[in-house]
Length: 114
Length: 111
Image: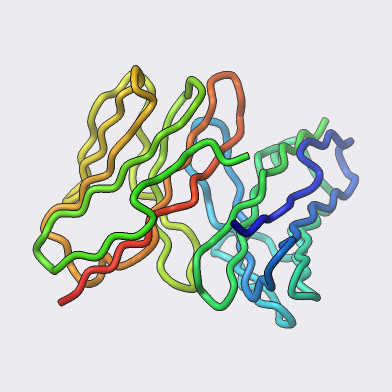
C-alpha cells in the first residue's frame, strides 16, 4: 500500500525556536494533505487542509502565522511551528490523499518544547 | 507502522441496513478511537473508548472493545446515504502519547 513518511518522529526544542515537520508521500502524488494535532488521551484535531500549489485552509482557532504549512510539491508538505512554546508540545500527524481517494497516515511527530 | 487493522476494506450496503466494521490491534492501549473521513475532507472524531470500557454509544453508533482479543467494532445502525465515508480506527498505545491509524474501511451506503 501507499506510504507516507513523516519526519522527525520525535523532536525536543527550546522555547522560542522553530521546528519543521515533513510529510512525504513516497509512492503516490498527494494532491491533498491534512495536518492534525493530538494531546494525550484526547482525539485528533484537524489543524489545516493543504492542497498542492495553493494556500492551506486552517481550521478555526489555529493560528496560520504560528503553524506555517507549505505544500509546494505533490510529494511533500511541511508544517513549521514557529516560536514554539511549551503549550505547543503535542503529537502532530499528517495524512495524504490522491484526488480524494483513500487516506494514508504518517507515523506522527512527538514535539516537546522545553 | 500502522497498528490498527480494519476489516473489511470496503463495505457496500443499502440504506436502512446496519454496517459493522472491525479493528484489530497488537499492543495494549490507553484508548481506541474511531474517525470518519468524507471524500476530500479531514477526519471527524466519532467515539473514543478507553481500555477499561467495553461498550459506548453515540446516536446510531455503537462501539465495542475487547481488550482480551485486542479488537474493536463500530456498528452503524439504520445507515443512511450520508454515512458513506471512510472509517478509521486509531489506537493510543499504553505508555505512549501517540496515535496509530489503521488503513480504514470504505463504506458505501446506497439509497
